[in-house]
Length: 148
Image (cartoon, rainbow, N blue to C red; front, side, top):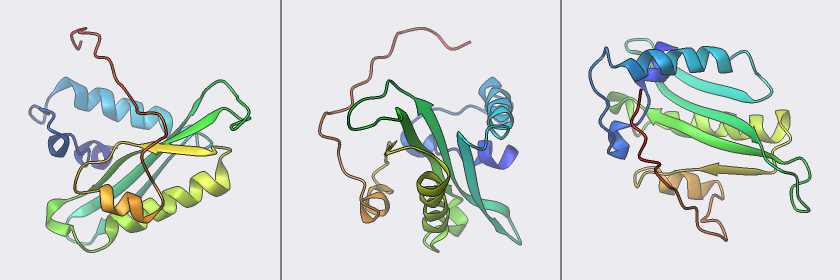
């Protein structure tokens, strides 16, 4: 779990991550540990490097939504944590992880739609796999609630 927490791309997304002892890191590690017990709803694919250890990842989750005519299962996929250590970027590691993750969605889940949020650096990779802006724009509301 430490590798998945370390590879979170929060800094690349403009989020302040705090130090190595920031409370969110332990909470994130617990979350990953819990999710690993749900192979039908969670998957993580990693690339290991002989010198640096884990250098790239792609994580996928499935969430239950109300079924509808275009999506009778109601299961929606989400890609996150596609990340590569800066020292090993531009070598195809993220592509390998993403390809494995998309294969998992297609072959191991009932998800008919897979969403993601892209950084500017990752958009071209996702578009090469067919990701496109949804018909209806995604909006987000921050509740103003302080993190605990």
